[in-house]
Every structure is written in structure tokens, then in C-alpha cells.
Image: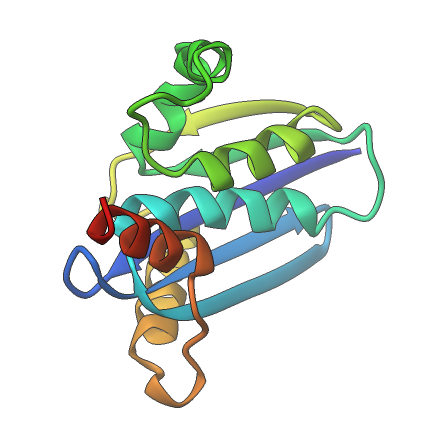
Length: 158
């Protein structure tokens, strides 16, 4: 079965309140997912959007095409950088918690990434952007990005 996933992440300030938006499409079926965090970064939200999209799939072995405007995410996977980071234990790299979570779910499917220019009138990407921004602005429902806030505390204690 073929699945198409559009993703986007946003943060108001970097770091600042952030959110992600995901649109999953399979045949006639469509699902939208969004969530906001009180303090995070744009790159974390871009990567988390991809993770959430893949984790939402109900069974392994799917053929998945992910559309993202994040060069950080797309190039890290498509150019193979992330596997070098794994070999080096993510030394001096950001977001190891999310990359490890990504690799766990990525390996369950056949995944192809397509980079698309952001804010280029691609309807589903624009929808993801609106979902991500709205989630970041929903002050009543912002979660804690534990991976980010924990690493920030560790950096302050060094």
C-alpha cells in the first residue's frame, strides 16, 4: 500500500514555542495530526513531524513518500549523514533522541523523501504549515519537549 505524508515544523523563536503538522494520505483516506510544545526548535519540529507521520502507520512494510521542506531532515537521510552520526554516537550532533526514534520507525517501511520548497503553494505543505503554526500558538495545550529541555539543562550545567 502506498502512503503519502506531508510534514512541516515551526517555532516562534528558535528556540521558542513550536509545533508540527502532518497530513497522511492513502487512497481516499486522509488524516491530519498536529501538536505544540512550549519550548523547542524548528529542526526538532521538522524531524518530529516525520516521526509522528511514520509512527501513525498501522502496520509495517508500507511504501511511503514523505514530502518535507526541511533540508535538515531530507538531506540527513537522503545523503546518508545520519548513519555516520550513528557510528560516531551522535558526537557534537543535535537531536540524537529524535534521530534514534526516527531510525526505529524508518526501518519498518520503504521510505522515500522528496524535498519541496516551503511556502510554494503546495496545498498539503501549506496545510501542514498552518497546522504547525496553530499548534505552536495554542498556549493552552503546549507540551514539554523533554528531549530539548533536558539537553538545555545539561548544557547549562557543563
